[in-house]
Length: 366
Ligand SMILES: Cc1ncc(COP(=O)(O)O)c(C=O)c1O
Image (cartoon, rainbow, N blue to C red; front, side, top):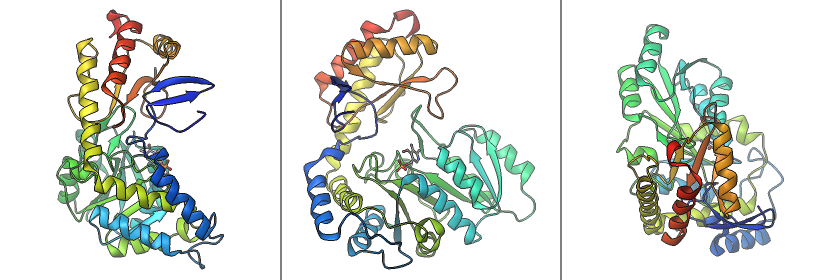
């Protein structure tokens, strides 16, 4: 990609209508984020060149953590070098506080969630993707008396755009004196009345819910976040991920602050995103491509096998439209075609995409 991500991008010298990636509000190229990053780098340099265990905590970093906590309505929040590390650090901190005995993790969870579970230090049991019955079975057959489960999952599974059944997970956690850990990398910013993510979207609030996420997607910046209660966040900060690495880069911290502020103060962006998602789905349904009836800005579908999806992907590129053909975790054996819509796509651009799909996908495999 030879320029910023947005509704139109240049890839290998050619201009495309772009329906991929995670820049849901196109904030990665927003002038206010860029300005804030530049100003902060001039003031603080590229980074602090030391970890927070030494003198690496800048006022900017403290301000970002305060704003993350404010955004999510939590007691405190930690900022980490990446969303990937949020899972590693969060699951380890819950373990170090001795808050659970066995991890039950959705086998379709993100790489980092699985890795976090496997390195946290306790027995790990995998259950089938979004399958409450399978989870119940595994809880019953695994837990010994008084053992507390930690149920770990992605909030929004990004490849096939499916939400975790968190209502059921929380219910099972309550019944078994356990906790739920959510990687909400894709839910934050875009879901819920205040953009707090999947839990807010599902109306869930509980002391048993813990989460990690990222500023690298909806918020237009970079870096992991863990909002939560004081003792937990303190433990995250004391863990090796934060004490053992340089403080995150100044440009990312400043962009994160501005991105959070813009998302918080402009709920209209989220409403526009939901509106565009519904407009896209209505268009796709009109050409007989089935979609889920919800406001998620991602549509995944599998017209035919890997060869036919590759051919459709290439034909769309010929027509100047870039969607994703993905083999990422969760895509399945043949892979999946995937469309992501932004709040900044125009209706005309979405119409052009739908027309491209109509032209390039034979009716028999829609
Ligand atoms: C579900 C999920 N969790 C975690 C991550 C990692 O976040 P980051 O890119 O900020 O490291 C990603 C992808 O980037 C993701 O899709």
